[in-house]
Length: 285
Image (cartoon, rainbow, N blue to C red; front, side, top):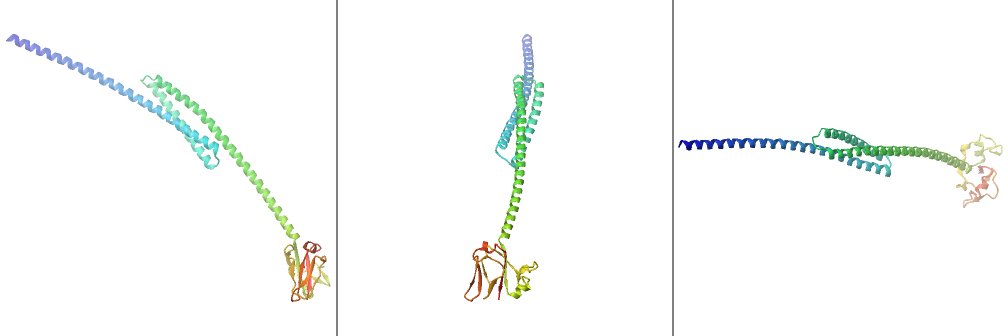
């Protein structure tokens, strides 16, 4: 009985030790698994952060390409202040985005240097982005030069237009003056004055002095009627007696009586009639 008890106690002790040994092994494995998972999670986070940076940089280059396309289209196919403003806005956007990409690439280089990952492929990709940045910088400089040349041409064109406009304005002004002078000359050439009145009336206005017509320069010019010889060829005299006191070629006019017996002067050849004098004086009763 004693022997059996000893055996049982021994068995229990062996079982207990075995259980303790197995428990110790499980704790070590779990700790090791947790540590490994932590490393994996850290590397995943690090990789995700790097990939986000790559994607942001590439997205920036895509936006720059789109803005370049807009600038080229505006630069080639349109004119005007609105177009110039749009070009300036797009160029500012390109320069700002380029600066942002440059900053992000520098940050990414720093991250890769401190990274615990195998970054060979990532560094190759970064090198490509850096090369793309350098190439894009040259493209933007060329684009800025093209825009500057366009602005210069537009300015030169504007100056040429202003000069041409000024010249046209001057020519038009000179033409207007010439036309006005021509019109005045034409008016003067085709302007005449006539008067008819009784002997007493003509003397009163110093048109007839001592039997002479218009010999004195102080005659009353306001008493005359001004006419355009091209338009006025008939002058009703409202008198049954009429005599021309100024000289006018025979055959260039006629004195006709109406049904009341009153005279009307009809000028049949204005150029001949007014050739000698542009003043017509007729004495009536």
